[in-house]
Length: 228
Image (cartoon, rainbow, N blue to C red; front, side):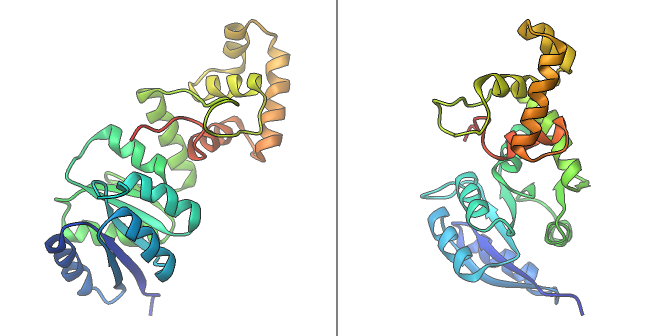
């Protein structure tokens, strides 16, 4: 028999929580082990119960779902979060995944679809619409969405510390925007070899294998400002 998937439901509407519990309780491989009514309580409940999956509303009292997810993923990185919301918005999906969610759906998602998504994220996958993505797939998706919605990196005097020099951060930002090494060299007025040397240093400092992984690292570690 497959392992039971432990789920916590986070929503401030008791009727919705009960309805979701009723849907999930009929599946023998899923067990709802707890509920929370706001973002702050969600962090407390999840740390205590350590579920496999959290089904979380975005519009919550105290801390919204994006804020709560960022904190939960920092405290309990193995927990998988599915965002449910009344608003089906492409940019909101991007911010939800950036916050650490593994999937995002509007609340009119079919029960069968939601159960399938719970199983997918428990297995370590990400679900965007009808697509089921692995770590490489979600990295490519994040870069594509970043280039649609824009943003810039934090620098040393900003909110987040990064182990890169200001020039390396500048180069990494251009990598995230999709520029090649030659385009970066032209844009910054430096040699192609200098860019390559900086990229070697960036990869070494971040412990990643290539420029795509470096760009995704910056996105997933909060070096690019995230709008609420």
